Image 1: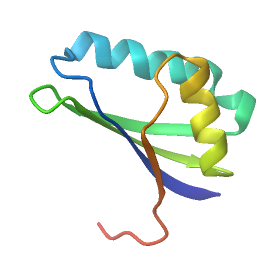
Image 2 (image 1 turned 60 degrees about the vertical axis):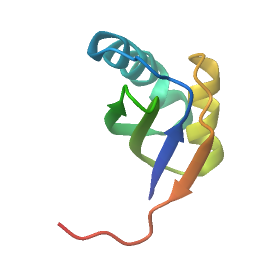
Image 3 (image 1 turned 90 degrees about the horizontal axis):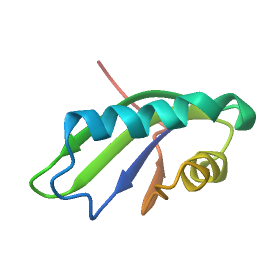
Length: 83
């Protein structure tokens, strides 16, 4: 399975609770598309949210986000990473 980083813009002022709720909504249905959301980050000042996932495709990631009401503005494959 491939790894993806998706980006949401326009979420200025997002709170930790709102981020948790959005992430939980994704987790609740992720298995329907074979997606595994790993983690989400947010910058409330800029309104940018990032989500890291393992998924069969960028389209699968986007379908989950669309169904939970927060369509991603960008979905990027992450073919290489280091820790």
